[in-house]
Image (tube, rainbow, N blue to C red; front, side):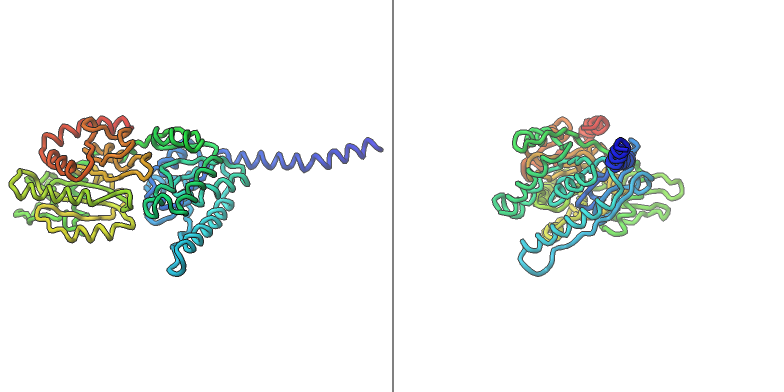
Amino acid sequence: MAVSCVAFLALSLSLPLLLLVAWKRWRWGRAARHVIVVVLGDVGRSPRMQYHALSLAKCGFSVTILGFSNSKPRDELLQSDRIRIVSLTEIRRFAVGPHILQYGIKVVFQAVHLLWKLLCREPAAYIFLQNPPGLPAIAVCWFAGCLCGSKLVIDWHNYGYSIMGLVHGPSHPIVLLAKWYEKLFGRLSHLNLCVTNAMREDLVENWGIKAMTVYDKPASFFKETPLNLQHQLFMKLSRTYSAFRARSEPSDLVMERSAFTERDSQSGMVTHLCRRPALLVSSTSWTEDEDFSILLEALEKFEQLIVDGESLPSLVCAITGKGPLKEYYSRLICQKHFQHIQVCTPWLEAEDYPLLLGSADLGVCLHRSSSGLDLPMKVVDMFGCCLPVCAVNFQCLHELVKHEENGLVFEDSEELAAQLQSSGHTGDAASQVDRVCHLGSSGT
């Protein structure tokens, strides 16, 4: 009788444990092939995280992306049956109260909202987080991982506190708090990726975080654009932006003409216009880490060279993107009175951006890293399109752009103007294209 009681008691105690183990095995079985990718920003403007999601899906994982839906992601993401995009609610700052209070309310709301969204998802083996922005996402993702048994992976694109420092100054209390926060919670991650060797070394030496460098590579859709697709793109853009419209109407009614190309509607043949303008492209988020006054000053110098009789083509400068400083620079552009240069600031659909890069004659990058440790992905995209690149110099740019090997590096508007002048000659541009194409095909 006593033995039976002991056996019954042992079974009663062990049954909940066995059920818990069985539940955990069932839960882990479901989670093992699921990854949650968190972007506390616009998914459509986060190409690296989109590429991560596509790579994970190709490897057999089911992927849930949590992020803001302000712009359209790549079609590959939308069409994949392994990828699901879940929109986060974005809260703007209130118009009343001190800025610190407005920011605090925003952070609290984002923390609660993100935690709720994470806990409502099916279990995941990994939570894959983009940083920045990491406040409050790092702490929230770590806490959700503790509750759900998920491992936290942080992809360090830059440091959030250094970006905040551009606006508030490096010694501002909010910036110092953000730095402490990133260091503290960044150490709780299970795996870390970063974009440069310089950042990897800094994370080890100053943060105590071991990371693996994963350089960006151009996606397959970044490539030279065939002439017929160039013409279609130019005609499409010409309906909205005058810089892409033909300077004169064709004498032959069967010809369809843009500022750069013309198409014979009978034969369908597309050709470049004789004496067409050169197309310069730059892309930006219009933030403090990109000083577009450098480009505007260089354009003024380029314009003066043409006025002085230099044999250079006229120029169309297309600056793509959205961001807080766009209105400021748009006003500066309107104050310029160029005769041989047209500047436009289009917002492109995701599918049109690589087509524009693949149609351009020169790419300009004005990205100065707030930390000095990240690299501009726009240059990687330009390399993929075999587009010659001029990039402003900063601490670790040499990991991507090597002066006079795969691109040109400048310090100020004087040097950029000289490089624009050099690239205005066909031979110089053509010789650089070959070098860029080689790099773009092999990756970084």
